[in-house]
Length: 262
Image (cartoon, rainbow, N blue to C red; front, side, top):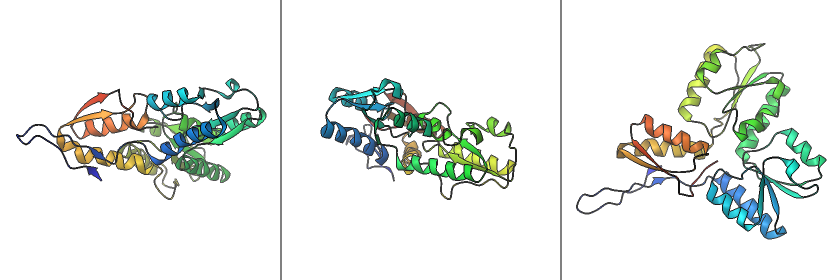
């Protein structure tokens, strides 16, 4: 894992280092394939709640093929076919889909589904759930919906300091899957200091694709200059850029690409 073999000029010119791994994660590939298969099998239009992935090239390609992207289900005709994006949805969205008799195709990333299941389990235990993530991100909105009355979102260490937990003996945490490893570790460490009995998932919720891409950026930081090819709305792009900055490599953005992410 890390930079692949560099290619450079024989006379000592600059080398290009391609990070490995790179590109779409398995969950994103799966979600895109779901839309393509639905279009091929059923024909257009196929409605998709939210962008299937935060990548305008992919979205434009699918839109041209007949996918119709909507923000909410009230934009989908009753009885129509609709796909849920890789980011997942709340139970309320599923109830709304059932009420409109929509034919649902669920493209939620399995790793996101795992976080939902953990939240459900912790809520059943009567615990306060600390959800580490960005409150406006589609994935966090969906996870929050599993137990909104017992879930508190934290984004920063300041949020951790401001936490008030009704029963510190019954508190658990889950995390958004596309976060910075270092930031999440710092927040979890502080949570454990403040709430020694806090419980967490048996394994790190940060998705393996996010983790190995951040590690690849770290390994390549010695190059001194990086070209970050990703979409401005994507969460992983922000995390990769920050990781490279912390490693003191110069970052340049290329907005005209079609690489990963969610």
